[in-house]
Image 1 (cartoon, rainbow, N blue to C red):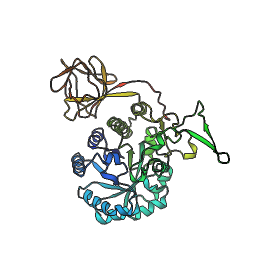
Image 2 (cartoon, helix red, strand yellow):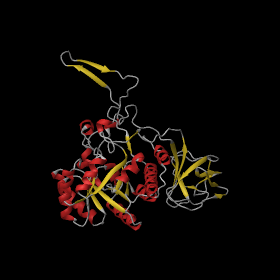
Image 3 (cartoon, rainbow, N blue to C red):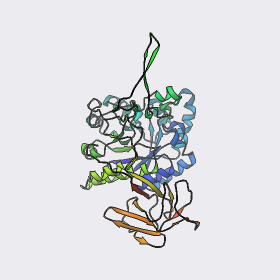
Image 4 (cartoon, rainbow, N blue to C red):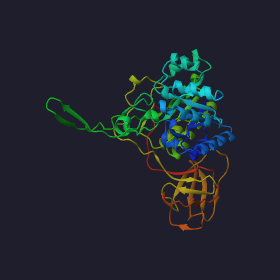
Length: 428
């Protein structure tokens, strides 16, 4: 049985995109009991039930995040929340706190429990405790090593193990951070982290005897984003991870990331997994696709090497770097029109990134043309025409008109263009 690819679903559109681009399962949640309040607000109970049904109709799975750490005052509300979501028949609850595990098992014993990375399981003793409590799968702490996970599996062969393969890294132990709580009152383990670790800081030195305060100047080769961790990218180690035989699921972080992030990251790891099983592994291609996404620089984290062996896990110069490509449009679910994400104009060639399909989309008419070359599918417009028949010189991201395609394309296809080159090495 092949490893499961698990992608984020910050809202219904991103859920559909993740599934379109090859996710076997998705994860998301409703309300403040999920550790991503911003994405949790994108779903109501009604739309989340619809999302669960949509996912199941595709023969795929959906896991519900209930991984916050509640206070006494929230327990009654949490109990009702679990009851409500359980009736929707999700494929698992993702939970962090032992008490919530017990509560979920009492209320909905038929729903499997996955232990969140927030529980910080770093050793097989803790894994045994949670397994004994009825946990089916552990989402390993980002700080644990592959060798340690091999020991988990040796001692607990029936325990499923899920690891993060891509996405944002936390400055603290898997989210156990108080920086945001101190500076803005937004508590990370309640789901409202303000990402204060991504800010630039000015450092000062104080002489307490004289009350003198000195500003520490930045040197030319060191930045002031002193807490800013690079993004995790383990594409170069997919073969090694799968060869281990102990990993059941690969997880992409990013419920608050863009639709293009969801598509491109899911697409790259889907193709990498399929390439592994078909003995057609194309590492340079997967790396280039991931480089197309906005990122903070990439790190391989700690799954393969121990933390003390790494000195390249921080980006102190900036909080976010442009990817190699800019996204210009997203094809609507109807497949016959698109909305602009940047300026789309006539007589400009755009690269097409679409869900996997063997269809031939070649066409040429008064609206434009779709064609394929050695580098993939391309599109070029002769005119920019809205579905209401209005003609435009160009269309920008602020324009809400739906723009006609020369011919139908798969839902959630993207148009993009390269904006710069970046050398990609196999070691990231």
